Image (tube, rainbow, N blue to C red; front, side, top):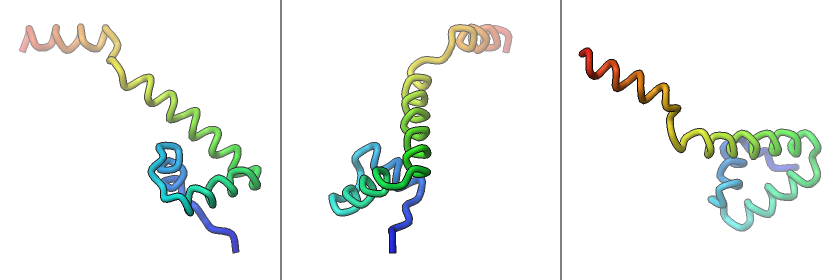
Length: 72
């Protein structure tokens, strides 16, 4: 019976937070199951976007907060 991995398992795999035996099983699942390959690719892409957008807020957000702070 093939192991059933969750979204959390794949996220932990991407961030290298799984034990070696699980790492091998997850990689085998990604390599052999086309639907998992698609989902995994989307997850990697999404996490890449998340890492980029959490760096700095847009300037207009900071300006709005500062303007509100001056009036409050």
